[in-house]
Length: 116
Length: 116
DNA sequence: CTCATCTACAACCATACGGTTGTATGTTAG
DNA sequence: CTAACATACAACCGTATGGTTGTAGATGAG
Image (cartoon, rainbow over all chains, first blue to last red; front, top):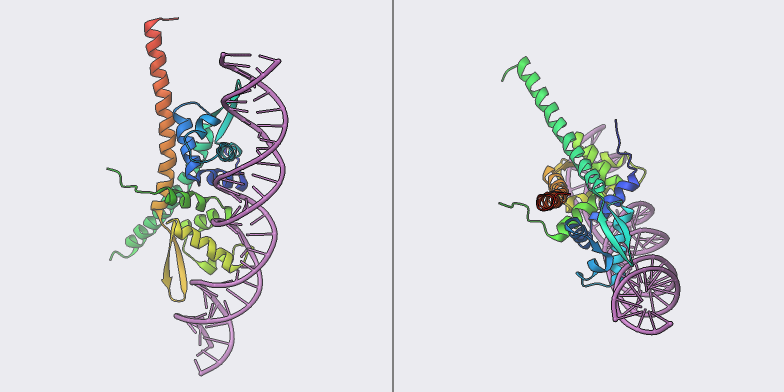
């Protein structure tokens, strides 16, 4: 049973989110400990608003959720997003492996018919 | 020993390349069998030039190479690119797992000190 | 209460991106 | 040789992206 019901647009957003070094760094930091948006922003040579936008991109990609704590907004990584992206890439590798196996099988078959 | 020597820009290009449904479809097709650029272009409701650009993006991301065969250019998937991207995502998941383990260890430690 | 802090969001700007058309070049078929 | 085909690439266009500044609303500290 397939649980992954990702539209093309969903997958676009997912990989797009990873396609920026600042956003990947935000994920790295949020993975190891809790950070507020301003706590994250302190690490980058850009405005708070810019970091806020990056977090929003990660949020739209379902890679991150924000949890209100007092006046702060805690950014937590949503592991499922990470896993979905990884599985997609594994899927491509699996297709490749099938192709290799298929070709190997054909070669073996040919060899059986007329060994060179 | 670390073999992956990917700059931020490299990784940007890698994920950016995946962030488009047409490019992902090109990869899917090229994974299962050989296609020329025009052979690929025949499948999409866009100009040949547009498909050519998509292939160029995949090429710059080292996800694909072109091999000249007569007047055609055969697009082949470069498996390493795929694997590198997948490993990056696995790395994030590993960090998450370490965090979970670390927290579990702390909780176990606390329990040892003062069992609730 | 008052002030500093954290967040949200709009407006703006430069550049990148995904698409188009058009032109040029190389290669194969007849 | 000529015609058709596959590719390459430049120029252009609209929109998205990544950044800025500025304004405004909640919340916590003193």
